[in-house]
Length: 472
Image (tube, rainbow, N blue to C red; front, side, top):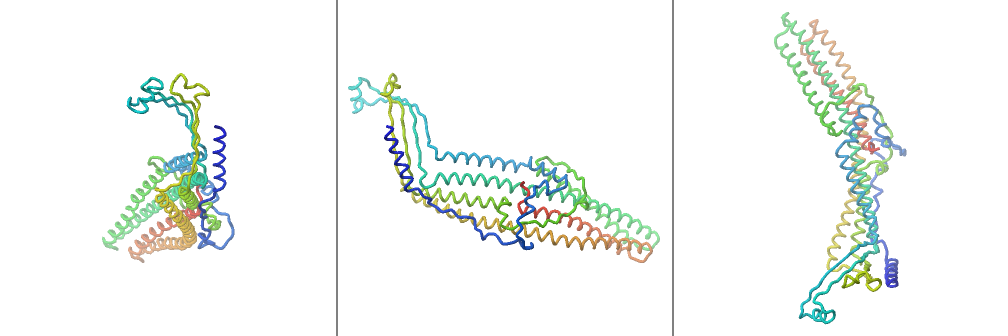
């Protein structure tokens, strides 16, 4: 039997060597998908980028670091992504066994009672003088498919790319969570600053209302002045509960991100104390594929699509399978393990070509081709979005700085205008409306200035995330 097995295995290896070839050609990621440089960035060949900096070094505020630490450790979406990685790893490990023969142990026992009038029944009665026959078998069976067309190899490639893709999905999720936590924290600081501004303005309105009432008692103004002053004071007062509401809601959002139930968030620094960084190291667009997880994931999706094309194409070709079975067999239990008399063995090998289901397999192949073309377009789109987000963040960083310069000057001018208006009003040289208008303008401008500062801090975070930072 050993000679027969050797001949069949040799035949299989010979066939595999003669006809083995790559039935499909992989498509590489398109090199023309990347521009030479980002818009709103100076032309540079510098490949360094702020995205290479770990998030613990990019953010310097201890409150943000504490919040992000909690989010990375406890965020439920990240933990789900971790489980998806674990599942993909199991699938990849399973795919490694594709070339290993399937071996099964078996023990069978059966009894047959043929009809007395049947050919088998008559012969059985004459041969052994019994009306039934028993059969006992024990042994092992083997089945192995030769990977002639690279089908199993592509299955492993696809599973490995899927495993890597699941890791990139988690990284992309973490970059978004890191950015969202920092945005939420900066938004909290802005709301705190605006709440202080509203309270200060309310005190200023109180002071103005007091002066107007004194002038009313002196007969210098009418009740209309008091009413308008009271209305403006109520307008400032209304802002306070609104801002307190927004603060509580923002704290709740941060709680969800950090995997905890709603509670207050610690702030040990004020918005005005934060320094806006001016990050200039952005690298070149082609580096996004190695730094930005969603772009890398799109590239890996193309590798998965390449593997699926190879698998479906291989299904259209003949499959070489070898099967073998061996063990002991007897129709009497007393002779079941009588060696070597009870030994048996069978070996078979052959090529199987699909015929009736060829149309279905051809359709699956065409679908795989279309899916691969779609993967190329998805990769191009992911690059477009990534480059656009970087360009958006760059222009925000630049233009928000200019807006802040003008707004600071505006606030400074209005603060001086308030002093002058109050002084002139006390001396009867200005109308109460001029004072109220100056106060309203100052309130609005100071609120805008706090928002501009928040936008600048967020723009830096957006640039960091857009370049692929936050997952290290």
